[in-house]
Length: 142
Image (cartoon, rainbow, N blue to C red; front, side):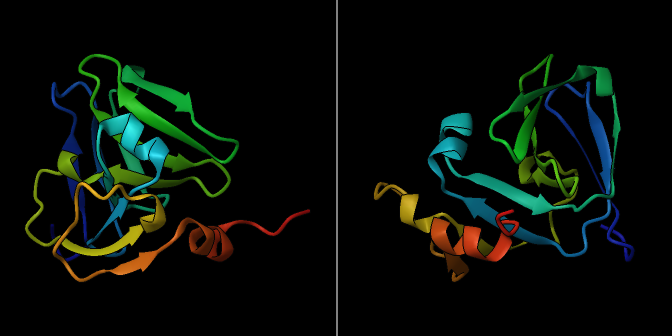
């Protein structure tokens, strides 16, 4: 990544490419059951906020996984691209898609209360349960 934190990446087949400007190079892992069903393991992501520009948008398929979020994947190769918060237009991009990952640091994990016992990361991270995530980030009830 450059000094401006410009990051580029692409799916496995190259049909979808993107340029993002993440505020930080912090990698997060989500252990919720939905993320694990989606990819067979924890979802490893970089929060790229709203500043993501895609090329090959005709190759992006969306799955509405909840009232507040959707997941994007490549129609051609099936690569998982992003978890997208609808209300804030925030994109959590799949970390494995980035061309240059040398500056990334694994800093946080969410839904640790849903993490199965058969794996564990050795990294020291900030950990949050599902209840803690919703308490911190969920919009107030109307």
